[in-house]
Every structure is written in C-alpha cells, then in structure tokens.
Image 1 (tube, each protein chain N blue to C red):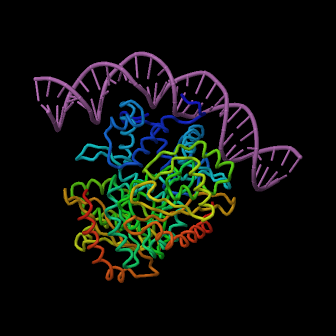
Image 2 (tube, rainbow over the protein chains, first blue to last red):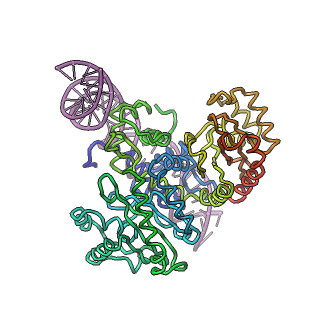
Image 3 (cartoon, chains in turn purple, green, brown, yellow):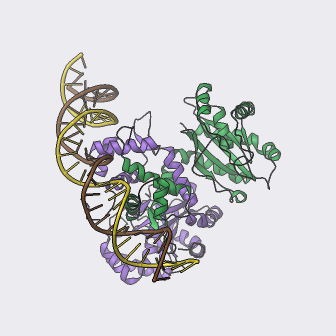
Length: 255
Length: 255
DNA sequence: ACCGCCGTTCCGACTGGCGGAACAGGCGGA
DNA sequence: TCCGCCTGTTCCGCCAGTCGGAACGGCGGT
C-alpha cells in the first residue's frame, strides 16, 4: 500500500472513521463502520474501542449504536472557538442573520470542495440540515460563487477534474452550461442556487477574497426555503446585502 | 506498553496531537508537538504529515507553525450540528443569552471533568476564552453544581481522586471546605464561582439531570465580569432564571 | 563564519496492526 | 423451540508499519 511517503496509515484509517460521524450522526454499528471505510471488522473494532476509551465515541446504551461522545463535541466546540477565522467572522454573520432572519453559511474553498466552517441557521431552513461538512462545488451558490473567481488557468484544470453529479433535476451537469453560468456570476457578483442541491431550497452566494493575495478563498451564502421567498424576491431583497457582507468578511478575515 | 486490551496505540497517540490543538490554537512547531505528547520527532512528523495530507492540520505559510486546517473546522462544525444534544439545547440557551445579554456555558460531566459542549458568549466576557474544552470541577460554578448532586458514594470516591489545584488565590483547595460548599449548593440549588478560576470572572451554575435515570449529567452556568456585576447582584438578578433554564434543558434533553 | 533549532530523511530492530476464523449473545422468522 | 443471521468480541500467526537514533540541509540568530 501507500504510494505516498511517510504517513501513518493507522491514523489515516482512524480519521476515516471520524469522518463518517461528521456526515451522519444517525449512529453506526461496528460492521457498518468496517464496511464503509473498507477495513476488517477486527480493525474497526480496535479503532472504535480506542475512540470509546478516550471518550470520542460512545455507545448508545439503548440502541447499541456507536455515536459521537461528549469529548468530540467538546473538542469540536473548542476548536471552533479557538479558530481565529471563526471568531472574526462570527459577529458579522450573526448580526446579519439576526437583522434579516436569514440563514447564512460560510464556506472555505479547498481540495476541489467547499468546507462549511460556520453556519447561522434560521427557523425556516432548520429542515435542511443535510449539508455535510464538505461538499462539491457545482450545485451550491457558495461553490459557484467561489469557482467563478478562481483564476482562469486553475479553473480550467478544476473543471476538467470535476464530476458534475446531479443532486436534483435542476443540478447543472454539463460543463458548458456551468461555464456559461460562471460568466454570469462574474457579471452579477454573486451566484444563485435554484433548488439545485435540494428541492425547496434556494440560495445566493458571494465570494470571499484574501486581501493579501487577491485570490478567492471561500464564499458566503444566504439560504431560504421556496415557501418563504421566490428566487426573484430573494435576490431582489438580499443580493446587495450579501455582496456587502462578503466584502466586510473579506476585510476582517486575513487569509 | 499497554495494560489495556486491544486498542490502537497509533491512533491514540494521534488523537493526543489533536487534543493539543483543542486547547491552544496558537500554533505549534513539530518539535514542540513531539515534546508535549512525549513521542519522537520522527513519529510526530509522521502523524502531523498525515493530518496535513488530509487537511486536518495546515502549516501557516508565514510563521511555519502547524495550525488547525479548514477540514477540522468544518468537521467540528458539522459534528456540533449533527449532535442532537446541542441541537436541542441551543434554542433554549440562545434565547436566554439574548434576552439578558448573558454569557452561558453548558457542560457535560464525564471522567471526573466537565466538558464544555456549548457556549453562547456575550461581549463582556469575550476576554475570558481561556476555558479549555475539558476542565476540572472544583473551581467552576458548573463543576461544583454538578458535583453537589452526584450520589453520595460516588461523590466520596470522586473527592478522594480529585487534586484540588489552585487556579487563583480564591480557588478551594481543601477537601473539607469544598464539601461544606457543596452542602450549601444543595440547599441553594445552584453553585457560585467567585473569581475561583480566573480573576475578574464570576459565575453561577445549576445542575442538569437525566429525567430517565435521575442522575446529574452536567451543568449550565451564567458567567459575568466583576466589572459588570458584583456577585451579589448577579445572584439576585439571575439565579432564579438560571435554575429555571437548567430545568428546561433537563426536560428537553433526553440523556 | 559560527551555533542552535528548525523540519526532513534514512535506517535496522521490533512491535503493534492486520484479517481470517472461531466464539458468544440477541433477534426474528419458520 | 429451533434455526439462521447478524451483532460484537477474542485468539492467533504473519507481515508490515511504526519506532527512535542519528545524520542531513536550511534558516535566523549572535
């Protein structure tokens, strides 16, 4: 195994298990974990008991399933607070969310994906929790907003790599269509997601830039339910405010 | 090594490194990490590059220090959201914090320590971020509130185990004094922290119970700066409300 | 030029991880 | 009730991955 040099494969495998719990907290059986990460039940058992021993995972006494333990929760909470990044953008996002009753996500661009690092949720989108912690770019407002401002050469390479998987029947699955849309995003200064990731969910997203390098580093998005706003209303009411917020965040966060 | 059975020591060591970053995000050098977790530089290097490879850690290009990567941040954010626990108590805590401009912490009791799993901070205690994700019990309002309601036999064993380390000159370091104070806590229904963990920081804490088993599972605390309220004022204004909130949380959270 | 500390790589010794197989317990269907 | 299936768990021999000392190269000090 391992074309890569000098990495700890045990640790890497172990992290795969943590990842699993980052996506769904439904709880897993040992065999399920073993199957999903592709290791033997024996190894899975060893890893899982290690996590349990240290309080990162715990077994739900009722269902017998493995779930996240308080230690992970506390560690996660602490990491988020420790993070200068989150600390800086939080007041801006919270204030914006509170003022207009908006659902706001902040994502960072990395590894051909967008990582959700802060979310401020509103009541009406509480149902849409299905966003996992890392997501593909092409069906998110935040993802398209970020993509649109990647420098042309890197973008071309990225486009070649991406698999445009359909999440709904509105998801863009054609490279040419996506490229055209990115052009539009550059003109408007923000991107739209019109039920492309989840039926009933619309969003607009604007890019975040590093003031040091000038490169795009992520995006911020406003989300809404189609029951609350139509796409047109949502854009008309909030697009200006979104772009303004993105600028404010870019100014504060030094990346 | 390993009196314990069947655990993955590589993973355990690797997790120790993550822990480090949960406590301080100042950033570490490789040698520092190796020294702190007590492994060779070679091993530390292997673990750290593994983390980096996967995006959990990253090197700050300016300082050269290892810091948390976006992946960890995103994973942490996701875990917090996935957690039913946090999801249930969040609206209650947020509403309470907003209504009175309070700083509120929620902690879970485990392994002779209190794990901070949710925090809602206010402006005036922003300075007090030094609370790490797991903390000893005896110098926190939340810790003393939880301790006071542990069943007598378990409490006796716990008291014998605890080392009453002083954090300030007001920290209780004597077992008899602590026991007397716990009696007072049981009478009042809440605990006080009068600059016992940090100069200038006061708090009151109330226990959370499992309605299923009846046992204490954690505590919730209100924090304030001495510049804002005196201990007496703080208690008079908020103690009733605190106890009420603790009951509400206990009712909602099924543990 | 020196020194000290940084991260990184190479190496041989060895230990801890590996997975197949076998065991125990719980649950549901026949 | 018995049987099959799936759960988690333990045992074991083999091999691979981890270990730490030592040595290398790069950078920023005095």
